[in-house]
Structures are given as structure tokens and as C-alpha cells.
Length: 140
Image: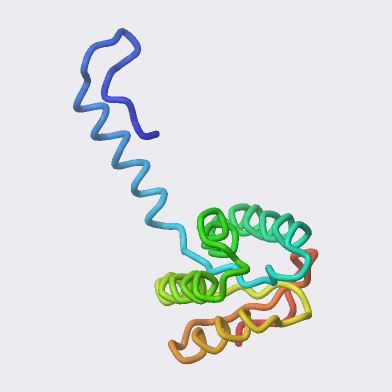
């Protein structure tokens, strides 16, 4: 969607459009991107709902969440090992663009362990949370 170049009367208003577009960009630039690290496999339905909650939590903290395990299963097949590996690899690329990694829950899946290891190798701060979105200590 975006900022409409037309005003309420239907006339093109490039000055207002540019000003509103810049305000929108400024608001987004000040938000930091966080990578949401949580289980997916196993209880896919429950884990998907929890990941959505973690994303809403990140937004409530004025962060931009990246949640690959909500995005890539939309078009990649989790039960195809090659496609699952591709999804993980693409997620790891996104992880390197993030300000922090937020790990949720007390169980670390195989995929989560790979993500945590990648964050450590890139010196990306890692924060741990309960499944109820309560912080567990500081960054690591």
C-alpha cells in the first residue's frame, strides 16, 4: 500500500505525497529489526500461533520482526529436506541483517541451534524470552 499521491479532492499533490512518504520512512528507519527464533517443526500449528504472538510482541516493543518460519513454509515444503534446507539458508541470510536475535521458549530445536550459532559467529546480540514473552536475563 503506500502514501497516495492524490489528495482528498482527487488532485495530484506531489509536495504532500513526498512529505508524507518521508515521514513514513523516518518512522521505519528508527525501528530496529529483530530475528524471531522459535520452534516450528513438531507442533506446527501451535508453534505457528506462538511465532505470530512473538511477532506481535516485537512490534509492541517498536521492533520490526523477521520470522522466516512463518514466511518460507508458505511456498516451500517443510517435509522436503532440500526445500527445508533452502528455507533455513535464506533465513540465515536475513538473520545477518538483524540488530538482535530473540529466542523464545526453553527448548532449542535443531534449526534454532543453527540460527543461534550464526548469530554468535556474527556477534549479533541474543536475547532469551519465555513462551509468555518474559525476558530471561540480558543479551548473550
